[in-house]
Amino acid sequence: MEERAQELNSLTPNTKRLLPRRQVKRYKLSIFRKVSYAIGGAPNQVAGSAAAFFLQIYLLDVAQITPFEASLVLSIGKIWGGITDPIVGFCINKSKWTIIGRLMPWILGCTPFLVVSYFFLWFVPPFVTGTVLWYLLFYCSFQALSTIYHVPYTTLTMFLSTDQSERDSATAYRMTMEVLGTLIGAALQGQIVASAHTSHHCHLDNGTMNVSINATYSLVNSTILVPGSADYKLHARNVYMIAAGAIGCIYLLCAAILFLGVKERNDPYAVSSENVLPFFSSFKKSLKHVPYCYLTASFLLISAAVQLQQSNFVLFCTHAADDLRDHFQNLVLTILISAVLSIPFWQWFLKRFGKKTAAFGISWMIPFAIILVTIPNVIVGYLVAVSSGFSIAASLLLPWSMLPDVVDNFRQTNPRVNGLEAIFYSSFVFFTKLSAGIALGISTLSLQFAGYRSGACRQSYHLVLTLQILIGVVPAVLIILGLIILIFYPITEDTRRETELALNNIRLQTRRATLIVI
Image (tube, rainbow, N blue to C red):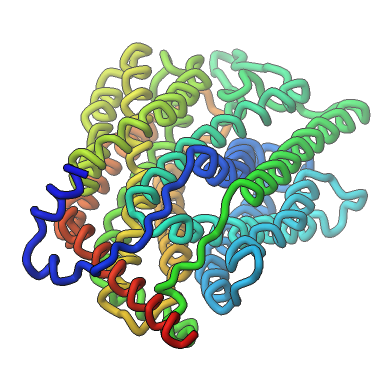
């Protein structure tokens, strides 16, 4: 009570006039509901992690399609996944409230089809002609269906409670479980398919060392053995299908827990909204909201920096830091474990010092990355892994904790336009995927121009220098630019409290109007 009195006394006179005579009832979320909500986000991360590390090697060595066809499947699938995000968001906005909510039917309805598409993505068809079309179809289906699952799930944050602190707490639980899901996906897939891999390493050939080294080697301490017998091929296909089946069961289990443990609340504010705007009008409306533009631009650059470090870390350890080559698997686990353990700290920090202040903790990885580039030894590698996990946790938690504040601010400044929650969330995901795709494309072109030789044990000096730039300099510049943009982000802690009180007033007026009509 004393804290509440101090909070009210600290408000400005203009804010106090927004206070309703009766406070709107706040829904406190139990730990059970927060954990249930968090578990619902795990399967997408488990499947995404498994696909990120193993899909390419599966397509090349188990499905045995050409590298060009594999790149076609992966690139088109990613692009299609990004395009479907805002489309799915608009379709969700057009949907009506049901007995189980407005968002939950989308999650439950797509889950069975998502499991089927994911399983057949790891299934070798009994025909040769048209194999690439098979994988293109199911990878695009998986990307689209995972979007249909992910967009309503992330939007569900706005309908768990009207209390911003409760939503922030639920977001922290969710991000912890999603990072843990990424760890589980890499570990589970690696352990199940490990028997399909046998180790081989560099060998001398007239004084020149050649090797086939890839990310999967670093993760499972082995690489795919070139198939030689029908028994081997059958075994490799079977273990991948077993892994797909196991992750499919995780999808079903987590969706069931989400449905049984989370209740979607119909916000009274949303009842008073007008008809949903057309798609392009909704999209343009969200892009004209200044806080959203600052938040999106900032984390677009920060996400690209994190993606660059993650995607090039394998190559850096393999070709630019000989001491780290045999430690890659442990370094990846250290990064993910550090991220999981540091999320509760960031949740406490943003409550104590504010979200904008917490965002600058992302810069923690910059000096350590520079040190790793200049002193690439094992001890420094593990220090960088811990610091990177610490910063990655902040970069994952903060945008999803700040986005509800942006939506609330939009509601306050546009009281007659509502129902755009899914548009905000889906377009944010779209821009994040777009930035990651552009960053990875430029990164790959840089390696090609630097003279990257596939399968070579020793790369040229120019390639090593390029990897050092991609690991250290480029991410540092992107993070600094992103944080500079975030300085102009207009939503402060005082603004958040004023917005919450204003929306509570609107909700209370809506309830009173509803009672008068009744």
